[in-house]
Figure 1: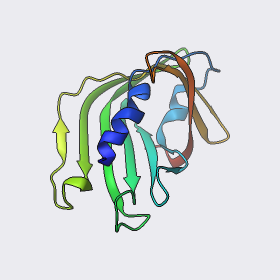
Figure 2: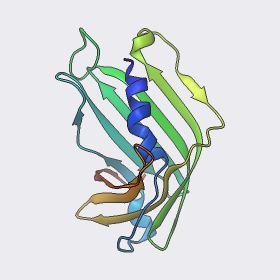
Figure 3: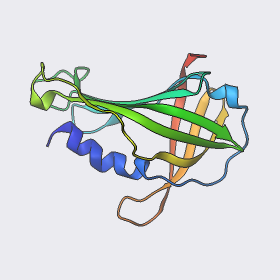
Length: 163
């Protein structure tokens, strides 16, 4: 199964998320880069997510899969999706408006072109609550993996200060 197809089932809960309460951080604390721990997806591969926020209100969310195809090294890129847009912060909520997505999957060949969707209007971390402490960004939301709400949390470590 192509890595991109695996993502669609894993991204669906995140893309249609609804959140619940956290503490109120300062809005400028979120500016910069954030990265999740690697998540194993098969015996040899893994994926990892990165979020970047600019002071001007733009964001980029990149999910990259590594080493999931036969004859790939563990750290060789297998596929990725990058979603770009704008964000606002209000009362501990992180509101993200998607504008564009860019995907690529090695399954279609190492020289296959990126697929760009512009405009791209899928909800992302819809009405997410967030908190920041000890250089960690925590997002809390409800996901709907099988049309039933599930309390979900995702944690990112600070990767790059102030973008």
